[in-house]
Length: 200
Image (cartoon, rainbow, N blue to C red; front, top):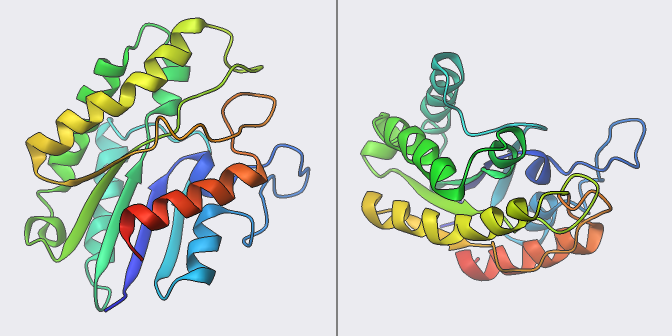
């Protein structure tokens, strides 16, 4: 029975569009989350936040865990999709994909202690974000390499934690001039691919 898809991510989940000087956001019908909401029987909640990195401070982890407790109360099935890591690479020049993966594993382990995930009422899926492309924000070659390596690093985490995993790092999602944010076509392609992954 369809339920709720919680999409927890950064600006590519939020639907950031730098060309929009008002909201800075693509319309709902363009965003991959909005496409899933419209074209499937699932209720899709967009919990993307511009600039979000993997929660790793006391306050950000605490807030995320509180959100899990709230989401746990929703009726029917609740799937939590977590797609983060791009900003961790952008903001920390010395970080490798392995460093980002360690941060992600610590975060997921803490979240999985919450009742909703510990009881498996909520289903957790880790998504390795699409790799960055060359662009204004991506001037260092190592960014391209490490963003592609997130897939294999995250796959190891998912296996250790026994959770579902989707590797979007090789999907070749088209980006705008900055090399990071999806184009409108990119959102459509991402929605199609994730729908196949979830079989919805």
